[in-house]
Length: 280
Image (tube, rainbow, N blue to C red; front, side, top):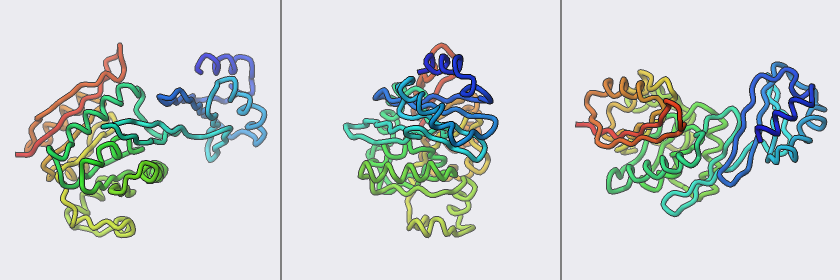
């Protein structure tokens, strides 16, 4: 798809004019999607004249032109990735400008590891997930818990997790738009949140034996560390091993019991590391 797109840019000046960024997404079934970010909005005719001809040329499911306050689409603006964990299938919506794991083959191993580390025998009780994103880990590990409270600030991601929960028949996951600081306040009882009440969540009744975090490269912020420090079991999946080491020092009551390395980006210094921490 990338070579075909480069060729299209070469021969079609209007397509490449003002281009700032290109994002290519693919699913394990071979479907593809391209998102072209421009410095300024395009005309409405841009879809018919420029984007629609790209669909067969790229053999893509969809092509999106994105600019400030503009979202033009030819075909679809999303892909559905299906992950199989413990013989059960979990759909996941992949969209431009929304984080998703880059290496789907390695991600499948990460999901298998996370499911094994959160087996009912190991954990039980309820799960708190901070910054759940598009639900990459949320649904595949949900079968290991009584209830799952997944929090995220991205409205689109929350909607997508809820949609995928319905598709896969998962009924024990509630996804709420909350920051880690707000979660910490709710856990302490400092504030009550209408968003939790509207979602039917009584956070005081939940027995969080495990928390799952998969933070960005910057690692965990102070409020996120505060939210997880009182939970006995932490499953921490990191894309920045140096930041992970720093965060582990900031959780002195927890010790590492299990660790795994996933080579998401071969031939680079980047790596995904998963650790399980136990308190006490």
